[in-house]
Amino acid sequence: MSKLSFLKKLSRNHILVGVAVIAVVVVGVIIASSNGIFTMPTLFGMSDNQIGKAAVDYINNNQLSQTPASLVKVSEESGLVKVTIKIGSSNFDSYVTKDGKLLFPQAFNMAPKKDAKTPASTTPSTPATVTKTASPMLEAFVVSSCPYGLQMQRAVAEAVKNVSTLASNVKIRYIGEVAGGKISSMHGQEEADENLRQICVREEQPAKYWNYVSCYMKKSAGAMANGMPIGDSKGCQASTGVDTAKLNACVSDAKRGLAYAQADFDLASKYGVSSSPTLILNGATVSESDYGGRTADGVKSMVCAGASTPSAYCSTKLSTAEASVSFAATYASSASASASASASASGSAQAANCAPAAQ
Image (tube, rainbow, N blue to C red):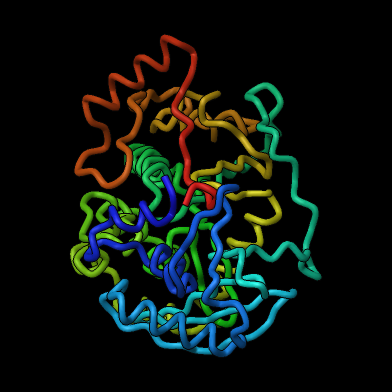
């Protein structure tokens, strides 16, 4: 299906912001050539600034966004025309070749950071090879709207609820980036904002953290422009007793919220983490499928496998049902219980995740 056919099939009320950004740059009639490359002949001979102005006119005149678009700036970068457009409160960058033939809705900066470190091996350690320590630490890297990140968070929360002492051996961390004093995440700004809220609660109100995230995961309260669901943060802050003033202060103070987030992101970079969820046990990647899957008992088993001297709770049997995926009112549904039984019988476990490339 061509990009033009895809755009025509979308309801105007549900056009993704990402698609709108693509449409912004396609300022003329899109013509698919026989070799599959899209060309924009109306751009030929136009200045960079004219391309930017025409882009804004196109999106507004064709009502491709319910919120009017405005031109922020036009520049050149790495031999391409960079068009920055503001839609609502967010800015989006797209790129076009100087001859107007090729469109790049998104670009990834492949230049290594000055302080970049070589990522640790991402080959999972097995129960037999995992490093054992007196104080094992299981870190689950997630993003707050990923259905499978929510599944892993739910499994960890269930384990901590049943064995409170596990809380000192497990930690939810988040995947993202801080640039220009602003946090970003793979599924959009709303997800990034919630990641930051959860990080602030985790760091400054730890006694409220598990109750807050357990509440947040129960029910979707809406969706982002790209369709990813979001939970009821305000309602959960109120019902779980989160100090809202303290939370808001943390989120708005770069020396607190962004600093905590950057620590998570630095660890994600160190471990080579890119997908949600990714599990790190005692500094090495592990696969939940080696320990019973995304289950409360699996979480406990991972921590116990990393302990040089297993705690008494290691003999306690927790739920072996796969945790519910995405937002869900209960820890496990009948469907997830059946899936867990099937996975156990076949010797496999669910390993779906969210990654930037899947967007």
